Image 1: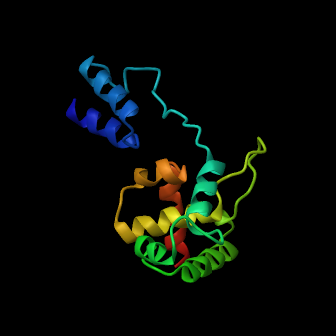
Image 2: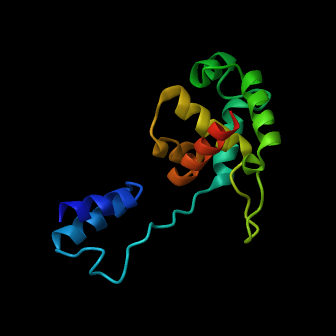
Image 3: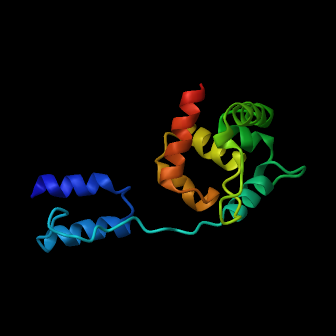
Length: 152
């Protein structure tokens, strides 16, 4: 029974709602082998445009909310170095270029993907930490990190 619990636990990405489903199923004595309906991760509609606008306004406009010294402190690099990394990575790997999906919605921007990746590396933070500010999900953040490591 414990083995099934941990298998189900590691299948999910540790969101509280999904963890509740796993714990409730286990408490009810159900297992994924005996239950025909598997719980899927819930889709969270994130406002990627708002995340990009906040990021851009805070750090990258002519008169940003946070000046260069705070940028350096938060990103552990200068703004020009960040922009150089952004341009190099985006030109090398199409995954980091913003596109429209099949529904016509804009995907995450290169800036959002690189920011999430570099801040995770700089601060050794968990993948879900960037969701609220940059509007990027855990699985996307992990994919960004994997692609970034493949490049470097």
